[in-house]
Each structure stands twice: as structure tokens, then as C-alpha cells.
Length: 411
Image 1 (cartoon, rainbow, N blue to C red):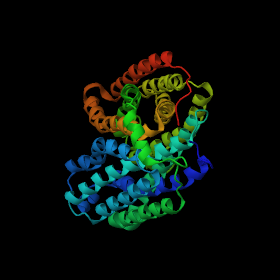
Image 2: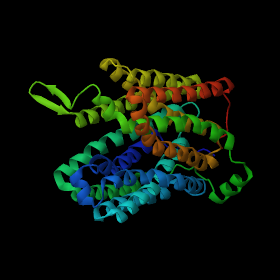
Image 3: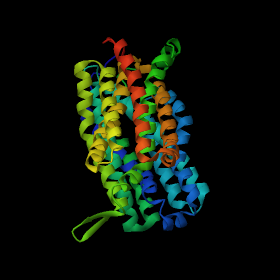
Image 4: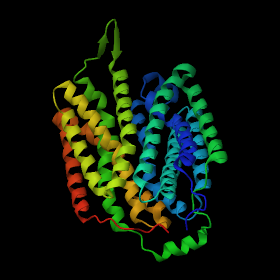
């Protein structure tokens, strides 16, 4: 049953986006500053623990995504979302209070559980307010907000630390996380259709088999995207850029250090993803062929990754920016297919299943990339990634041949 007063994307995404931005500060702070020697000392951990701490939240999501999806299929979205955001603020408080690895690891585990609730709920809400004719575009807007949140949080995480110190920055981030929960408490709408009875949904879910086949098919491009872009490239970008720029870039009397240049390039990639995602989603709406569009963006990724392996700096940078389109497009197309072909009552569990494989890919990717670099070099590593994306693209091409525009199913 459709809502009597449909919720517009702006009505949802403005409070949703503000909450995403504010809740990511604590996580972004750790990724930005924890590898520094003085920060490690203050946090009470060793260099060998940094990777474990930073990756713990992704590993725990392999276990927490399924239960989170189960909850979203059975209960209203809004309360679960606010609770997840509050748990995220608690996790950042754990970082600020920690003087050794135990509490810090506990905070990372809590953040992983919180992010399962935040991101599955956010995507489910987006599917709730979308239709077949605008689902790609609406999911593109969500990706735009997500990438914007990552960019702002990454910049502010380092800035807060510089201005207030490690713990001061984390306490501010915890406060902003609590503010995010309050924003959602007062302004986030409930997106479940008016008149939906949750107990009836439970009975309905029990009657309809879980779409294992479709969910498993969708994990292939999603897992590949995460292992390549959020795994290998995230861990090796500074090594890739260091091939062309030795120590930094001198402009006039000023030298921009390599780490700063890496951050700027990552931010530029984020901007490309932000700008391209809504347009890719809109294209999939107009063509009514999401798998075909997925094949096209996979092709862009293959071209971009191969370009990044080239010795010419200009071509390599251009390749990295082209590949950023793929990194932003696949995460919006996969949920759009879920919205098209999976009953609303099973959106949560289906998304949880797909996102679990994605988290596994992003957890394995850094180790894979750093293991390949000594064996085949940066260029060879990115060529291997291009081949992985090629295999995924061929798989998506086969699905595109089978794809039929069908009216489904959102009750």
C-alpha cells in the first residue's frame, strides 16, 4: 500500500545526509591520524595493531549485517536508525576514553554494528521512497550524500586533531555523533508505507522464499567493486602516486608532501563519484536496463584501472578519475535492482546479505593489494584489478542478456 503523503527525496535526504556526515567523524579521524607514531603512542597501541583496529569494524559487519537486515524487515525503520546512530556515538566515546587496545577494539566493534544498522537502514529507506521510474536516480542521490559525507568527515577528522589534539577531536566527534542522533530523532521521517502492519509482514516474509539466486548474483559485481576500489586501491594509492612524484610536488617556493597529494587525489576521486552517481542512476531509469548500465560502468572501470598502470603520469591520473565513476555507480545500481525485483518485505535481509559480501571484499582487498605489489609491482597490481573487473563485467553482461523489463512487486 502506497503512502497517502509520499515522502520526497529532499524530505528524506536532507536530515539523512546531515546525520551521515556527523556520524562519520569519529571513524574518519581514526583512519586519518591513527597511523601517526605520536597518535599511536597516545592511543596506547603498536603499529602492528593499527591495521587490526582499522579493519575490525568491517570484519564484524560480516556477522552484523544479517541480523540488521532481519530487524529492518520486521520493525519500523526510524527507531532502528536512531538507535544505530546513538550506538555510533558510543563507539566514538570508547575511542576517546581508550588508553590501550581493548576499549579501542570494543569501540570499533560497536561502530561496525552501528554502521550495519545505519547503512542497511539508509538504503532500505531510499528504496521505500523510490519507484521503478526513478529508483536509479534516487539511489544516485544517496551515493552522492554518502561520498560527500566521507569527504567532509575525512577532512574534518584531521582538522579536529590538529586543533584540539587526538582526544579532544574524538570528544568533539562523539558530541557531533550524538547531535546526529538528535537530528534524526526530530527530523527523520518514517518511510514504511502508511497502514503497514509489522506482524502481517512477518507472516508474509515466512510465506515468500528468500531470493537466494538473485542476491547471490548481485554479490558478484558488488564484491568485486569493494575488493578493488575500497580494498586494493584504498591501500595502495599513495604507493601508486609515489611512482610519479618523489616525496612531493614543488609549486614555486612551496612543496606539497606526498601524503597531502594523495589525500587531494582521493578527494578528487570522491568529487567525480559525487557528480556522476545521480546521472548514472538516471540513465538506468531511462533505459530500464540496470544490468546493461552496470556492464557499461564496469567497462569504464576496466579502462580506468588499465590507464592507472600506464607509465605516463597524465594518462594514469585520468584513468584514476575515470575509474571513480565505476566506484560510485555500482553501489547505486545494485540496490536499485533489489528495489526492482525483491519484495519490500525482504529488502533488509537481501541488502544485508549483499553488503556482507561487500564488507568481506573490502576487508580482504588491502591485504591482497599489498601482497601483489612486491610480486608484480603497482602497475601489475592494477592490471590484475582490471582483469577482476573484466570477469565481473562479463558476468554482468550475461545477466544483461537475460534481463527483462518487468513490473514488480513493491506491494
